[in-house]
Structure formats: C-alpha cells, structure tokens
Image 1 (cartoon, rainbow, N blue to C red):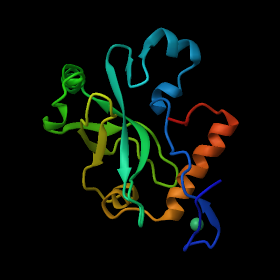
Image 2: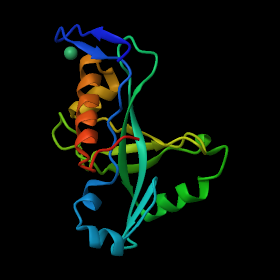
Image 3: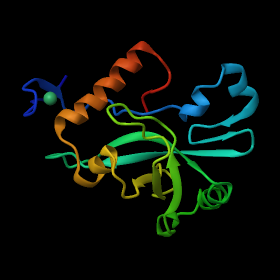
Length: 178
Ligand SMILES: [Zn+2]
C-alpha cells in the first residue's frame, strides 16, 4: 500500500488512503430476517422505507482529520419523519438543493468505538444531485459529537478504516464499502 505514515499515537505505520467505514443498511433493517427485509422494505442504495412508515436516508458524517485536506466520511443512515422524507424526495433532483435549510433526523447505525450512536439527532445538509447528504450532529454530550466538532487524528481514521477492511473481507454485510 502506498502512503504509509507512522502514527504519532501508536507508532505503527497506517495506510493513508484506505476504505472508509460505511453501513449498507440502517441497523433496524439489517436486523430483520432476509425474508422480512424483502417483503416489508423498499430498499435502494440511498433510501429505505420500512412498512411504509419508517423512512431512512443514506448520508455521510464528515470528520476533519488532523493534517489531511479531506474529511473522513463515515457512511451512515439517518431516520427521518415522513414530512422530511417527502421534502428530501422533492429536492432530490434540484440542482439548488444545497441552499435548502437543514432538515432534522436521527442516526440509525451504531458506530464502533462509541456509546450507542443510534438516535443521536442530526441536521441533514443536502449537498447536490450526485452527492450524498451530510449529517451534522446536534450538540450533545457524546464522543461522536466531540469527534465531529474537534476532528479526529490519523489513528482514529485508521481504526475506522481497519474495521471497514476487516468487515469487508469477512463479507459480513452490515458494514460495507461505499
Ligand atoms: Zn495509530
């Protein structure tokens, strides 16, 4: 692998450009038996509707990384109300969607290395017709909010990606490559 850097936290070399951690489905949907997933859900790569009453959209939680130009983007799902879902649907193909006010949602995946992140409230920022929305945590006493407000170091980026690599290699399905 190219771009190995010696980590200042643990002294080991970490690959620079690795897979980013991403979840293929909201946790509650992943937990369903395969048969229920098929009969009760409408699933696309960016949207899941469960029982016509729970609405999820896929997005990114951007985290600044010390000394990197680019954010580390955690690929996660947010649950939204039917109204918000309708609003996002209306804006889906709108080239000016990034000017719309941020919309409320709650995280629908439990991220590793944190107390449960499911249910944390976020503001959803639409980015553009070919980009996933970005989720910004509302201020709360939680380590993920701290990571998003202060940024993370290379070691934590490595830990997220290492988890993603292992899951992807094991083909466990829950967390998958974007
Ligand atoms: Zn390290």
